[in-house]
Length: 304
Figure (cartoon, rainbow, N blue to C red):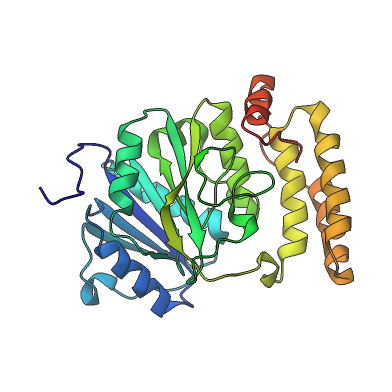
C-alpha cells in the first residue's frame, strides 16, 4: 500500500456539486481535483440548478459513477442540494456525501480519504466542516465557525459549519431531514446544524480538510439583506425555545444596526425581517434546553 494511504475500510463517499451553469471552467477544475483524490468517490452527482449541464464524463476522467441532473428552475442552494441527496438516497450505496461549492477546489489529494477515516472512527459524527481559504491561504473571519473567529487552523467540535465545503452523514440526514429548501439562500447551514445537534450528532471543524475558494462577500448577492433577515427570523421561529426567540432577535438586530453601513441594505433588511414575521416559517421543532446548554458549552449559545 502506498505511503500515507490508510487501509481503513469505512463509509462509502459520494461527491455532490450544485451549479447554475455560469462557472464552467471552475466546475471543470473542481471535478479534476476530485479525480485526483487518492480515495475515489463511489458516486459523483452534479445538479444543474435551472440550467442544462454538459456530459462531464465524456471529457473528464472522473472516478466512480457520474450522474448529472438538469433542473428547469433554480431551487436555490439548499433546494438544489436536496435534489442531489434524493438521487444518492435512491442509489442506496452512499454513507457520506461531500458537498462542494462549484467554484471551490480540493488542493490536497487526500481529502476524501481523511473524510472517510473521520467517519469510520466515530459513528455519531454527523457533519464535518472544511477550512475555506483563498489562493493565498487566507481564511476570512466569517469562515471560522466559532465566536470571535480566532485561529482558522484550530479544529475541534463546533456548533455550525461552512456551506462551501463539508461532509454530511446520510444516516444523520435520515434522522434530521434534509436542507430547508424554502430558505433558498442564507442560514440553511445553521438550521441543519441545530437539528443535528439536537438529535445528538457531532459537528467537527477539520481545518486539515482544505477547500480553496475565491474571497467573496455574501452581500454580492442582490437578495442578500432581505433573504438573510427573513431566514434568520424563520430560523429562530423554527428551532429555538420560545423564551430565546426575542433574545436572539434583539441581539441580532442591534448587531445589524451597528455593522450595516448601507441605508438601502438596512431598508431591505427590515423588509425581510417583516416578511419573516408575517410569513409561515414552516415546521416548528424547537431544540431541547439540553441542546441549548450543549451549544453554549461548545462556545456558541444559540442567541449569538
